[in-house]
Amino acid sequence: MRKFVLAVLVALSGLVSPAASAFDPDTPVGEKKEVFPIMLGSEEDTTIGLAFQTAFGLPRGAEPEATRTIDGQSYHFRPAAIHLLPNNVGVLLSIGSLDDAGHSESGLNAIHYLKSSPAGWVKQGEWIGLGATGTVGNGATSWAFSSLLGRNPYLITAGGGVWQGCAIGSAAVTELTPEGPVDRGAFTEGMSSGAGIGQKEEQYDGKIAAAVADKSFTVAYTGTRAFKQQYVLKGGKYELVGKDQVPGC
Image (cartoon, rainbow, N blue to C red):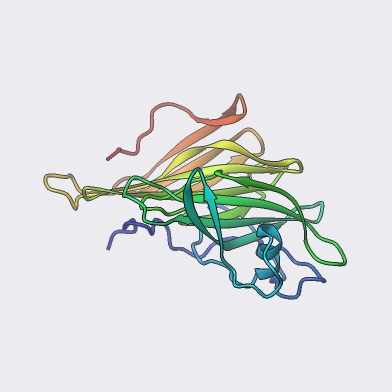
């Protein structure tokens, strides 16, 4: 069974480092040791309600969902994951789905910086529209936080969709600087074809398998054939060295 089907591009257990705060008992405590390859997960963390309520200005005890109208379109946001930066700021990722979306329309991701205090989370900043998204109104379909790519932690999000029996996914890398998240580029996360008429059956799954901090990272692909591709930081963005070996749809 192919790994890429419609809105689910990667459904593996993730290396997500959740925030921990003594004043916020509903936030999970503990971190998993990070190793390569970086694995993305799709399980949403519904226990981070207090952080989500602060981020979207909801009353205490409200359901973990919020509606925002952006450019005349209505998006429903829900909490996905949270990560604690060294300066005790929690970075909250929320996924926004678009109501009544067409196939080519995507959702939105929201990133909030929340400062811890004895009274609870205090909102520091909001950024909407960063990271990878999926088709049919979906935001990111998988994600992970990682400290393996540079001096600052990174958020990796993936999304994509299916076009006439061919599925393709893209992953975005977002640096979580102390001042806010910064888009650092994207890479092909996976591809699967063969369900359409006359299509050649191929499948490729990519994971970040190595990195030189703040300089480059390597994506290793498995599937129809195995190979690696390197991305180098140039002009503030990670760029592929050479031609993309993953076929398009």
